[in-house]
Length: 336
Image (cartoon, rainbow, N blue to C red):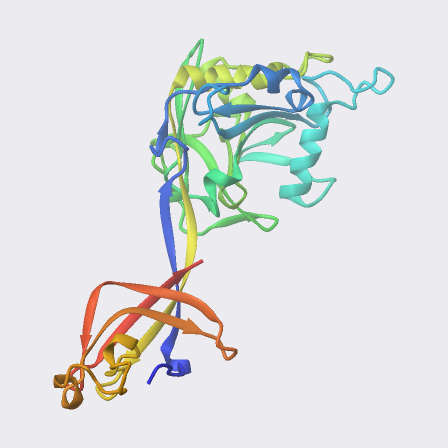
């Protein structure tokens, strides 16, 4: 027997949630941050600032996350056209994230919960590179230190402080609070009259930072000056993150695995088709001991479709002895 048709019971599909380090450094914590002068002076620099794990001129440099500034009124950046002063990169960025997250062009963001909520007419954005976070950010792994003239604040999501997930539109969201490893400090980790430090959207790989709360505790302020040079506010937050020197974050993804069970019963696959097994002159078995007690060594299993096309090959770590007294079970795992 050379081929055996697989039955429906031979296939099993399983899904597992995998957590891994997010940054290209293969470390859960990013402690060094670099930017690219070429990117900053280019068109994209008007909208966001790309942050790398090493010097951007190195061949191993990869974008880890981008920093952007958004303002509903267009303040904090320079107009595309002086005839329309309110039409600026910061206003475009606000509209972009309003459409992406709120799914309503007339809605506005808010930071905080219960009685401590403020309207978010402006905010910073940390957008993690998709190649880094894969399917989503892992709740509870976020630890970000912001450093300013008035001190530092250590931020995390509040995933361990809630029992029911909250959604904005179709996006799961957590509040960004003072604390560590998904738990706020005593008191909730928010700022009186300024709400939370921001919002965390795991599936979008996006963190919004509330400038009012950050300014109140660290002195790091987002300028809302009209006609401010593009990229100024992005650099302000970058320097605050650089000074903090600590950005810890993990990724999470669901790996779907197909398990295929290849079974060889005691009466199957006991004879080899290797031509050296048979004499070329008379067609007789060379080793007479194999006539009544045949034996094979399974080293490879091939999986074919109905057109006899080879689709996949499974290699065993060591040869598996097979004869009429033994049955074999080979489990093949395909990850997607």
